[in-house]
Length: 372
Image 1 (cartoon, rainbow, N blue to C red):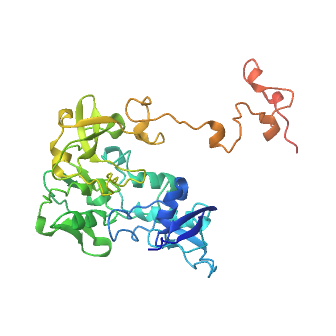
Image 2 (cartoon, rainbow, N blue to C red):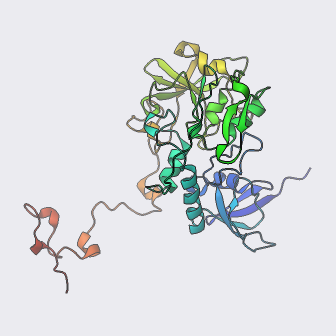
Image 3 (cartoon, rainbow, N blue to C red):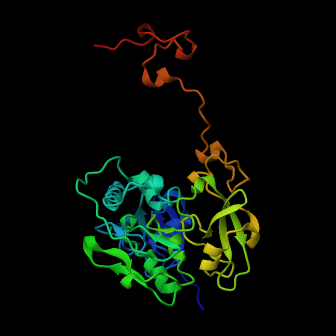
């Protein structure tokens, strides 16, 4: 049996070889960093996901070696497969950045500004997206949409006003449970996630809709308003569970377990187990096992030092790690400049005067006079 052919694709001037059938988004994730487009609806573990939020739009400046013509419009990288010789622009394209800013503005039109009280704050993908691509104000002058509250049972809280209709929870319930009791009702501006005739979500794996939700639309009632994620320490733990993988992240404060979640990778998706299966967890592990004695603690979970979860924590104690790379390695071989000769750049100071050595405040005589 012949091996699967590898195709060369260049994304933001970085070339990588990937198997045929790989999407542009997954190819960019193999490169990592800012090269990977953001994704609010795509979830690699859920079949059929993607193509709805439009945050992963990219510009294909070269279709392939056989047909080098660029694609006329921006394409969704989560649904577009690579071709040999394809060249893609993500953060290097002004069109993409402008389109992404517009998509973020649309996502925030009806989204409430309740981050200070939202349990998703600190690990919300929409927060990260709006920080990187959003604007400081809004042009929306009308009343935001509101929805009737739906009771989804004792474990899951639905805030439909925060929902961006990514459909992740619908796919999760469809593919993990044997009976899906919720979905998208109505159309257009009235579309909402809701249950049919007010049924509760009581399947043993339905708690995973909390982990896949990129915003604070579906939250854990057992953790609601109890603490902030950056005050908790994430610990890897496991137990022998007959229903699921049993591999989780415990969010502790002291010896108290505030919540239990599945382990997630750098893209915010549930990790795979050693045998390649997705490490979904059951409701028993998530909601009922809230004591450290219920678990075998493996150790602190490594958290990206740029995450707000790692802020204010010392390395090695609650999951954060010290940066191993040097300043020179991060800045392409350049040495750090601790002191800068400001007047050689701005030509504001008089060359023979160093402002830091002046006793007292600087005066007009210490600066060059403006040429009329």
